Image (cartoon, rainbow over all chains, first blue to last red; front, side, top):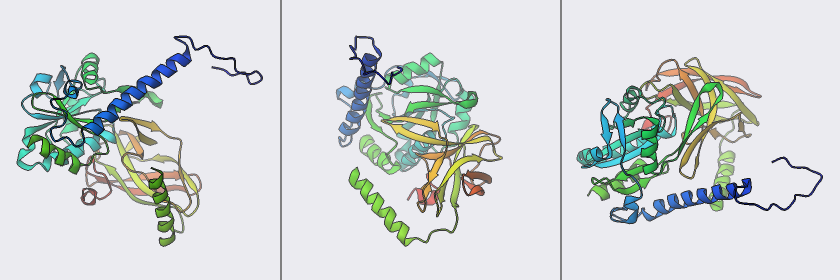
Length: 216
Length: 152
């Protein structure tokens, strides 16, 4: 989009498929995603039973097949029977991911004897680097017994799509890369239904208080 | 939002008039997070204060192949991490590198960072030059230089 400084801008006809149309479409799509996120965050804040039983319960989650840190296949049905706290991240992430996993560990410890009714789950968005072995070493550093999941690029993409998780590789100098990714902790009930979510602003205290109300 | 900003600005003014300024640039409370498992990347943090405007331009440490200045930002619910060229240190205002914001990204760690260990980190400033500090390693996921205080 080079500009010619001497002439006035001609009126842009903005036909379908033009860069401007695509830009507007992208902005609208972004607003819808942000709006949905904000709606979820706001609507779930004060309901004692969260989203269970509402239309939102089926909007987030869904079938997946991945492999855990011990090389065992894990599907969405394996998570049923217990509450689950699900976070998508990657092990090369030095800031947001350890924060989230540490917050989860502290929150679960505060549940006392009920801590075993909640299963913390870490799903990588970087299957290229996160093998079951590297995930195993990674999650054992946290106090909570975290189930860590990876898979093929396609398997991870399917799981992330179900949970409305965005991720993208961001190349850096020297061949390294970081991952942009949604940083949200999802609460799924024992039937595998989406119930509540926490953001990076949620404190471990807020998470445990909410969980106490939910698991009863 | 704007009220928060004004309160913050007022707070800074009060803090500045109440606190004695260091005579020269200081790097305080340098800390890092223990790295989980074989994680190749870690993050170090510190609070920098200078009586005159300066700029943090680079960092290095013998524990990692390279150290870069990074910023972590949340756009909506999406976390993005990006390298930055430098970080301005305004005169008299402490700048905190902390989780959820700017950090020194330690890339290609030679060894995992274990809680309780310490290591040297050199921060290069445009005017003050290099400053080498001893970084204390806190728990993985710790939120501050003192893990006991970080959890209230």
